Image 1: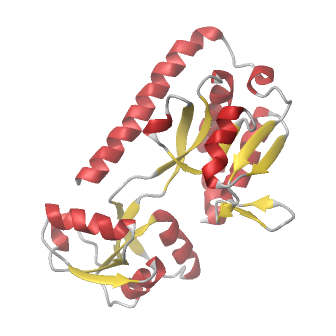
Image 2 (image 1 turned 90 degrees about the vertical axis):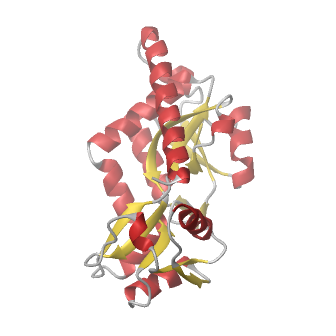
Length: 259
């Protein structure tokens, strides 16, 4: 297991343990209070609607994976919902100031923000994947030695490939301008493997549904919902709703609609 994946797994474990400890400490409080969690009588959601397919704005409405997820959570909690379209760099300020109640916006879990923000369990992992033809899997990372690996030049995949080469044997690099070009190279048998993020691969395979691949995560990049740290009622309601959507398959259905 490479160093970056190990660190990402440790961060995910830390978030999980903090959440478990927090949940244990508040179970004595009884059930969460919807009125206290969402005093405006609706769940006000901050979203950056410029990150398709997670959220987009056509000038009349916002739509996307995060929008459908927010609507499903609101339905589970049984409250109306309002969306506030905010640029990415203003999201956390809007949450902490109380302009919005929660953030659902393809947010990475950031340890540095945990004094002000509490994250739910993750709902999607956009980590980097090592992708190979389904009939030519690479059984281990050592098996990449000398193989032709396509990737987007200057991207996270480029940086991860350098880490892999530090820990394993060198590969034959095939850099491309876009991650979709890296997948084209693999599909057309110019490359033996490709490194792309999970969103890129899922969207690409919607276009080439008959092309089968094998994948393994090289890094983890969990997306979660953010609430204010001092609003334990909102966190419990939203995290509980997300858990229910995972359990009943609704989350998988939403993800499959967009990715």
